Amino acid sequence: MKVRHRTALLVLVACLPLAAQASSTYRCGSALVSKGDHSGVVLTKCGEPASRDFLGYREVIDRYGLRNEVPIEEWVYGPRNGMYHFLRFEAGRLEGISSRRGN
Image 1 (cartoon, rainbow, N blue to C red):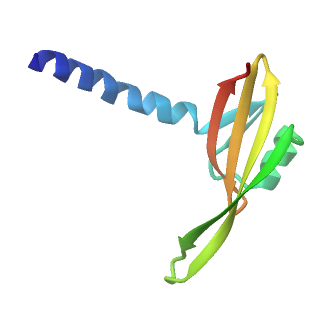
Image 2: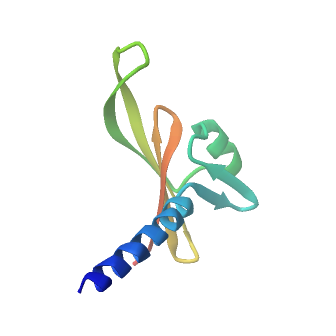
């Protein structure tokens, strides 16, 4: 029984870097955008998204200890080959990339 748990844990740990790496960039045409890019860079490289949604604000504490609210937006590209791509921006920077197959 212990061998099964150890094997399952090793497989899970081995797959974690692959999952993190897969969602850190997005290819649009011949251009590539990465987490941390400004929204203007993404717009220039990828063009206007199919939709943009304002999701609200998130409170952050800056390096001086001051509380600030930063806007959160989600841009959707696609469908491209049946896939929708979701890009999440916080304070104008790309913070999350995910994709989902359409219905």
